[in-house]
Length: 372
Image 1 (spheres, rainbow, N blue to C red):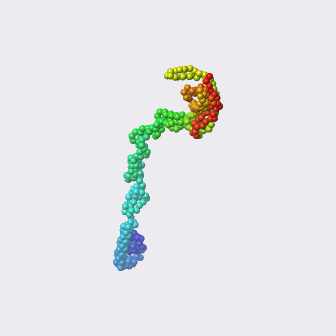
Image 2: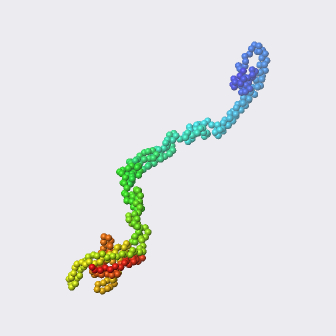
Image 3: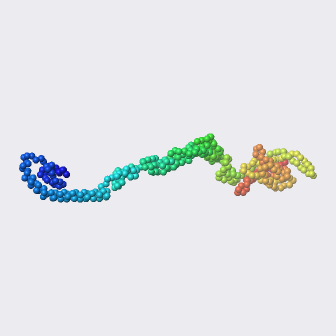
């Protein structure tokens, strides 16, 4: 048998529900059979007396139970409210995750998972990087990185390849001896090389280009002319000298002799020419002495009387005295000539002027020169 109020299983002889206190009616009891009806009659009389005494006690129990239940509910509600208000217990209200925030309860702040992160577009020279999900500008446009125009390309962005304007003119570098006119930027050429401007080789330098300095061949080397009394060792090509000029320390001694020659003679007197013709005479000769600057002649003159004298004879034709001595220029056989009416003890010596003074040769042999 069950309680019709709370469904609790009851004993067959229960009068009240021992859980909720509800009275059990006859309808709730099992059916009476003829066999047990007689035996239960005395019991029923006893039950009626018990019911009369127990009825007030069951009502109190029910009321007490109700109070307990209500108190329990209130306590449970208080506990629940406390837990709810402190977010120990929460009926979550979820806000979807964003680029920067994970899925979050708007009541208690509990999170779940992770933020989605930005879905960034690529930044370009002209366009910002923007999140495709939330629209936030993540990076400003970089702007073009311009490379100046050259003779091959216009002004060009090194990042995106955008161009602006036109190509620049060539930066020409003038032609050289070996290279044509050339653009220093792109290497384009125009025309032909200028060619070398050669300067002839010298004694010390090879053939050399006056523009670029290139050389060809070797230096010629000096063409030395041996030192003389008047100049040191000298290059006949460039004039460079080496060392010192020679010092003359001695001269060869002349050797004199006579030859017969017809010498022109002109005598003047009383304002007119008295005689004109030639006379045969001994012409004094001596061979030229190397390095001599001139000669000195010593003699004794006979022309109705005797007199001693000297004469200086240079290496050029001249007269010494008046119609007395004749000195001819060097002949084909390189001779010096000297003549007189009559000369005795005639001798000659050579001289030379040096840095250390005048030096002389020995006097030559003596001869006599006479008119024929």
